[in-house]
Length: 56
Image (cartoon, rainbow, N blue to C red; front, top):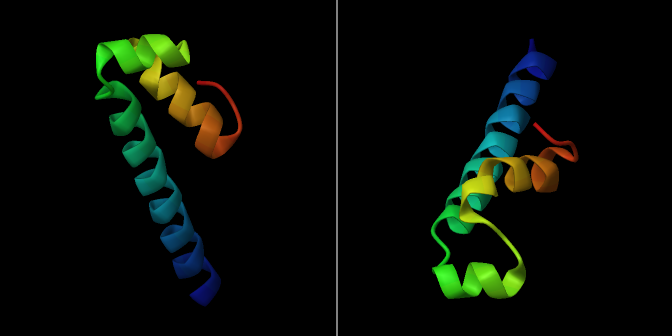
């Protein structure tokens, strides 16, 4: 039971990091995003790759 609760906590923490990363990329000013070579519309895919290590 303890291991299951710890896995849930880890999953929740990882998802929170994903959401924060996704939101930060999506809310970048357009000129900053272009300078970095990012498209704000790709924020979910970029965040997924950064946090989970794979693409959606």
